[in-house]
Length: 306
Image 1 (cartoon, rainbow, N blue to C red):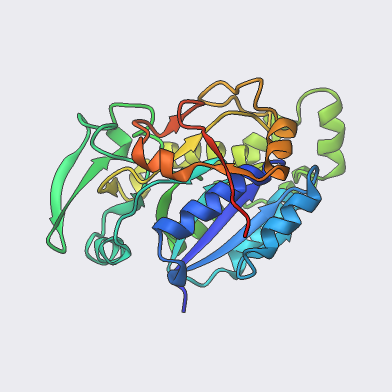
Image 2 (tube, rainbow, N blue to C red):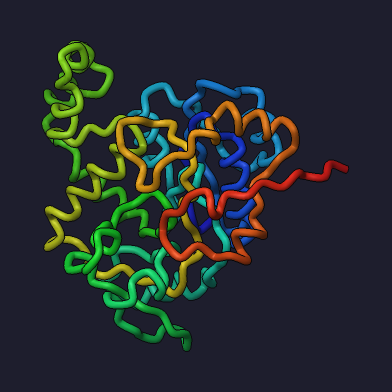
């Protein structure tokens, strides 16, 4: 039985998804992970399908309605843990899954085990402890001293208990069945509200996310507003992943790092067709110092086909 369900979101970035999957299976235990990819099919279908053929063990879902499709994946998950992913995330190091599993088994105050936090990011927030004979750290996220440390629910690189994720998702959405019917993202009322600019505000009020950005930000906001009923600590050992943000495919939420104009999705797809791939070795040798980085870490290398 797999131990981790990895739910990945992607749109118009086959080159970056290639880097995500390559680095994920390089640094994390492939035999323990079942990856589910929720793909918003828009551009570059041929490149995506060629990429998927290289990873036949991944489950691919073509997005029709983000909220419905995501909840369907979540409902079917039966692994103890969930790890979310976005296509511009890259792994460059690893933490023993045995250590992560033992931390969850021993800590009753754990919200999640982060693979994106390190001492160089959160020096003033951390509390050093020991688990399984190894040094790890933890932070009390409701009282974090940085915006990043106060952001407990994210789609980058944190391992969560599946039961906690399902509970949070369920409780962060309106339980009113009439509201769910009237104000779901694809309802007639929401389509009309889009014409007068009120759809986003209405969906946010009821917690009806409709993109990866709104899933992350609205659910995280619910966690922050209900911190007293949630586990207080995020545990971590070292930074193992970062979001390398060089372009934007969803304009509903501003990227933490500005997108680089010359790295449009069309330009990067052309390079992908030419055999260019993300240089994961470069990132591993020059480990990012923050949870989000930009073109300094974005290097391409031409793949040698045999």
